[in-house]
Length: 111
Length: 115
Image (cartoon, rainbow over all chains, first blue to last red; front, side):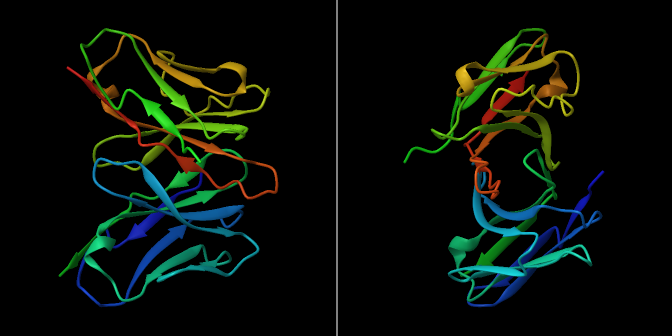
């Protein structure tokens, strides 16, 4: 069974700092990898989707990379803002069916 | 366009009662998924519907849980004889599988509290 781990579990940074969130998975036979953001009491917002054939995806200040062979992905957030405070979830897809989720990294950006 | 919607947003029920949770997927999305997020735990897959195929029920935790999807659109997740450990946020997602993206779009969830 695919297992997804996210480190660190929580991270606190001052506003303006660049930061990296880490995700690792045990089975490299993945179809895609999705990064989500979850605000307290809310659902999930998709941030970036990387197909297994891709190495990275970028959206604004966010950049996600994928190294399938080593079972790792990173989410890089540039010039962090207080509005970036949320829990970030990594999820691995093995096809059209379900995603396997990590337990998330809770990010706090201090003004 | 409209995203995935779920109702109710919050549900409080007594132990032993049955509950129904509803999900309206994005129009045109052929795949629909239910997940559960318990306090302090990650999201747990429950069930997956794709078109007219038989659903993948491999994630349902017990036979008290069932789900159906009528007309390839709206889905209902039913929990019978609710237990306190069923308290969680139930999230629904949908996906448009053509093109091979398989990106999942999530609804806001239903927070279920069993007292």
